[in-house]
Image 1 (cartoon, one colour):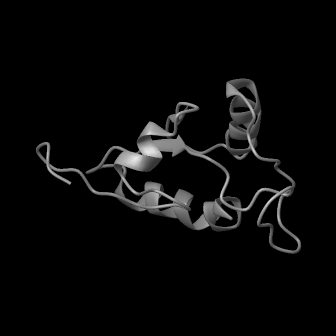
Image 2 (cartoon, rainbow, N blue to C red):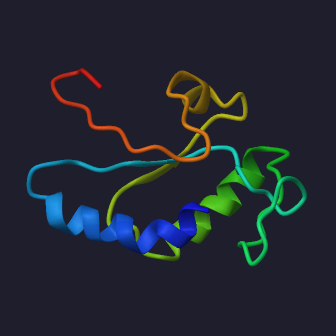
Length: 97
């Protein structure tokens, strides 16, 4: 789960915030508790609507991400366009990935 790696991500932000901007896009839950779940994972059920996804994204906000957090649409547009399941890190420079 991304939440388990989140402290490492926050250190990455600290190390490179002077030369890069960071953004988290909360996508569909890869290891939902009512789906393909890991043991000892954070309990997040599959998102049935945007309200569920927003509520799950608040778990990230509660951990003080040090960058903006937005959520994907329920059509999972970001996830599909960037093959972002379960999580990915992209570098964008001058409009190129």
